[in-house]
Image 1 (spheres, helix red, strand yellow):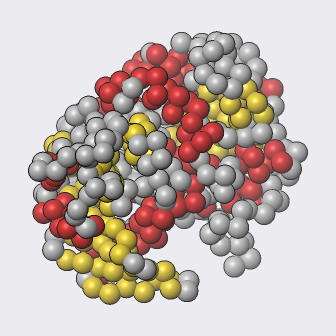
Image 2: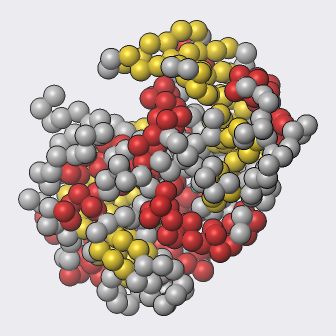
Length: 459
Ligand SMILES: [Zn+2]
């Protein structure tokens, strides 16, 4: 059984990777592409990192894994959960809560027990799994924080390096990495941990997550992030060299490489709350008089109806639909989902292996839109209404921050929803990020969880 390295470069678009390979400023990625196959795949919705990394790590769509967005409303606790739309949003939501929600609760409380992570599935079969900086890290091994008391103990893979907060071994990494992000220190930390693991060949499966590209692409826009790809290439070159060069690296490991979502250029940030300026909206906590909660960040938003809300989903959708910042609004109506866009409507529901639908098919011309929306709506932590932003628009977060003029993602649109997919030693390229976990498990001879939808190799 061959070992496998899964590399996820956050926010990398297929066009950027293809250009880096063609023009030659991503030499290590070029070597990997030459040794394997390169294609494109579809992300989850909303196309935001906590949702998509969880889909990659579990093979589940949001309706199964229950992580709905970067920011969402916990109906039971009556408060906003914020994973870090921006530093200002994290402060606004309550810095201590943000810290606990992001570092601990996302895995220990929010991630559904129905979902199975790659780490859990592999280590249950006696294989050694390693995770570096992956936000969906749930595993079987208990880890105490490096600095006692800064976080509760967590369950992760047996080999676990997480932003200097949790480290299964002392690998000589710098625990201050997380605080010097703009200088590339987060991926620098990941590199040091990965170099240590590869040098010792201390795993059967390694999930190597590189997050700095997304940070650079948000600032400079997806077309201008060449420097981000150069750095990511360097992070990959580090582990290739640690194995003794590309030939010995590929002798030892098969490789899957992708991103979690794409990015598109945004020119304007809008406050989606403006659609409901006459209604009492909840802030970070809901009070009895509040009627709605709007959770928005990047290019996706959700609207939650509270107990006292007098407006029906259709009326709320009609208001949202008229806003020029909104492209698609979607909600459940009985057994159907309703998607609205610029006055047109499409109703749909699963039927057999496909969909039955009525109305205007042009409402949902984005990649795998029915399937992604349906699962997003089935998520018990999602709002009643899901909103995908119009091209060039970003929804300001709880602190009013956005990335205009720069790059963003989150919508159903192709540019936000398409990822590169590169495989060496893997027979079939995953067509969706949800097919990665089952592909990895099958590679190790393990049956994927029953919710997984990847076609079998024999099909
Ligand atoms: Zn991002």
